[in-house]
Image (cartoon, rainbow, N blue to C red; front, side):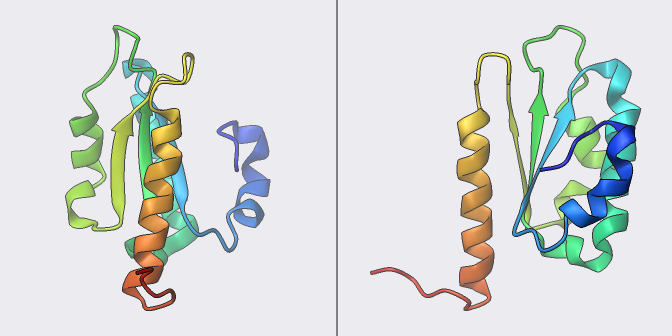
Length: 124
């Protein structure tokens, strides 16, 4: 867990050490689009090449608000389609819509990574 506030910037590298997966929560409001990109680029700087295999789920939150940007714009901007380890979904945290699904999706991505790398075997 890490926070979005700049005040906690210094704690992020320690918090992100040895993570199995990340849920990146993007605020879908148009006025904070650039801040989402800054946060994404910050994440890339922490993980460098590891970003190519680290399971990440991008949760586009606040989908209930009228003034939101199209998620495809953000995905295109970050070159989402080149990654096989990143997925996305829509959420409305205020009422819980899609939140549980985020956890289910990140668990699926993490288990897939470990299974693909033969770190766990299939359960039959």
